[in-house]
Structure formats: structure tokens, C-alpha cells
Image (cartoon, rainbow, N blue to C red):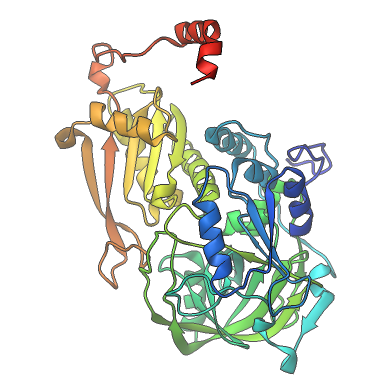
Amino acid sequence: MNDLTAPRLYNEYDRPHADVREFLARIERAGELLHVPHADCNLEMGTLAEAVNQGGKSPPALLFDEIPGYPKGYRVFSGATNSMRRLAITMGFPVPNHPLDVVRAYRDRMKNHEPIPPRVVKSGPVLENVLRGDQLNVLKFPVPFLHELDGGRYLGTDDLVIMRDPVDHWINCGTYRVMVHDARRLGLWISPGKQGRQIREKYFSQGKSCPVLVSCGHDPLLFLAGGNELRFGLSEFDYAGGHRGKPVEVVHSEVHGLPMPAHAEIVVEGEMLPGEFAPEGPFGEFTGYYAGGKSDQPVIRVQRIYHRNDPILGMATPMRPPSDFSYSKCVMKAGMIWDEVERSGLGGVTGVWCHEAGGARMLNVIAIKQAYAGHSKQAGMAAASCQSGAYLGRFVVVVDDDIDPTDLFDVMWAICTRCDPAEDIDIVRKMWSGPLDPRIPRGATSNSRAVIDACRPFEMLKSFPPVARATPELRKKIEEKFKDVLSRC
């Protein structure tokens, strides 16, 4: 990783994709892209994303083109990383056969991952069009109105909100929702405790405006980085560069000198003024509810718009899961929790999975090979409280290594047969939550966690009743002998 000139395979390619356009070409070649012409950005795109992603096990990515009311060439892209194969192409992993293959590939890379800072360049495709003054109009793009009860159109869903910490001067790139108020004003909602909100409050506490960029349409790897909890002070640009094996190229914005992806499709530059708020929301979110409601949130005053010719707007559609991004969140979150738990000193982890039913946050399963009494409880508490697993959690389940953590039936069987409710379920109170949690009262920001130990008791490992099933060797032998019969089943 230190030698940026060392050969490296990116899936079947010899280098990472340069931008979203090259990524689109790669996933189309892999048979993972569906072109959708003539879909209106008013409800049709969001509803189609719902129908496609909840209609089967391997939904394609969607590229909306020939959008009514917009110039030919203006497009919207949904579901970039929402399959095993597309996620492998994004990250440069081998083609997987099982969800945990991607998680393990992530874990293997993180053992040697080193952040690589971005490279500042003088120009890039994002500067093909620079809009100022009377030209400013975010509604020139096909910004979708996603859900029937939403409070407005949302430019920022599959986005990067880029800020510089005014004290420590590091760059944070978070994925937060951005609503359109009008042609030159945007509303930004950030959950309490998130790094972008902490940075914004530093500016406001000093009576200063907060400079900000909103990037829409970029390397999907940046979306994966922006939507997860990295440690405070680690820029998502650096994290993504480490996964690419080479720096992300950035150019400085005209007004505030903030770094924006040089190959981004659309970037909006502006500032938030302390004390200037406007109603934002409601918005259908990844929990499957309009839990955040409507509230007064800071306004971004648009000062510049940068965009490529024939720009492609990225779109994520939060909804009752599964959604057009929930699968990729499951994989990334699982890999990050696994990495953090092991770095805390706990060994024996054989798998981690964050289930889509919980929005990749509220139902997390960790599998271990027990080595000592208390091992399973330690694993559960670590998974519940680590940075990647803390926000908006609900249930953590610990299972033995013979249980597939991705298989919800397998997990429920373990809970039903290996967990005694009075002995094996612990409740942890006052954990990090937020307004998107539909179960907590309006205004609350903490909730409780159930840590469910669904492992066989360590003291009973030798005496616990054996599982009633054929050995792998016998099953393989019989399946081979009767393969003609089984092929008709």
C-alpha cells in the first residue's frame, strides 16, 4: 500500500475507475445496470427504485435518462453499490459467492490499509461549467421528489457534504440529506453527534458562517466512506484513497478553497449563516419511517455551482428496507464493526453481519469461536459500543461459529434454542441514537440496546446436545449419488 506504483488488481481491472462514468461502463459490462428512460423526477424515480429493490434478490443499478423536462444527457443514477458484484467492483475485490466474502475481503484489506491524502490538481471535469450570480439554480438538475409525504425535493441523498474543521483543519465528507428550498437555498439536516454537525457548531459558536460543499455524483467509494462512521479526524478522502491505492484527485473551490472531487458530476458551494434556519423535512428515511418530522435546520446559501457537461446526479432512496443502498451499508458496516472489535483486542470472530431489516444498524450479528467463559458477552458488548456499531443501534446478537450470521433463519434458530431470556439478554441504556429512531420520543437522542447471547453456554460446550443434521462429508456423498434426483427438486 505504501508503494503507489505497485501492481494491484481492481476486480478484473488493473486500476480503479476514474469517475462514476467509468464505473457505469464497468457495471454495465457486468450486466448490473438497467437503463430507465422517460421516468419523471416527481415520484416516479423514487417509486421505481422501491419496486426494483424490493422485488428480487439481485436488483440492478438504475440509470434514468431522457428525463421529462430536462436536457437530453442529464441523468440520475441509483443503486451504485447495492449488490455483491457492484460492491466488489467499487472496492476492487474479487467477485464474491457469499455476502461474507465481501466482508472478509474488506477485513483482509484493513489489516494493511493506510490512508492516502488526496492530490490537489489545477483542473478537472467538474470545472467544465462554473455558474455564478444570476446563473445559480440548483433546479436546473433533475432533483427528485422521492416519497409522497416528503417536504420537498432532495438534491443530496447519495452525496458528500464537505467541510473543514475550523480548529483542527481536517476535511470531513459526510453523507447527509440536503433539501431544496429554492434555486439558491438548500436545507441541511445532520443528526446530533455526527461529525459534520460538530464541525458546523464550532463555526456557529464563534459567530462565523460555515463554508460547505455538496457533491452529487462521484466515485461510489466516496459515498460508502461518507455514509459510515470513521474515526474523528480521518478524512473520507484519505480513507477512500487508501482503498483505491492512489489518491483521490481534488480541486479547490473558488469561494472558500474547499477540496472537491475533480471528477465529480455536480458540486454546489455555499455557506451556512449562524441563526438562519428554515423548515426542513419531513423525509422518508432508512428506518422505513418519517421519524425526523419537520424542523428548522440551517440554510445553505448557494454561491457557486460546478458541473460536468451532461451531468449525472447520484440518488439514494431511503425507505422501508430493503432500499437502493441498504445492502452495501450492511457489508461496509459489518466489515467496520469486525475490524473495530478485533482492534479492541477481542479474538475469535468468524463473521459479522448487519441485517437489512434493521437498516444495517439496528440488528447486528457477530459470530465467534468461543475460547473462554465470558467471551460471547465481551463480543456482544464490544459490537454494541464500538464507533461503527453505536449509532442508532437496537439489537446485537452473538452466535457460535456454526451459525451463518447472514442467515436470519439460522440466527433465529440459535436465539430460540441457545438463549435463555433471563440469563442471556442484557439491556444497555442511554446509548447513542437520534431523531431518525421511530421508537424514541421526539427530541430524545438516546435509546437502549439488547445484547442477546445466542451462543451455547461455555460451560456446556461439551455437554450441549448435538445438532440433528448430517455431517458435511455424508451430505456431500449423498448429494453426489442422488444429484439427478436433487436437480429436479
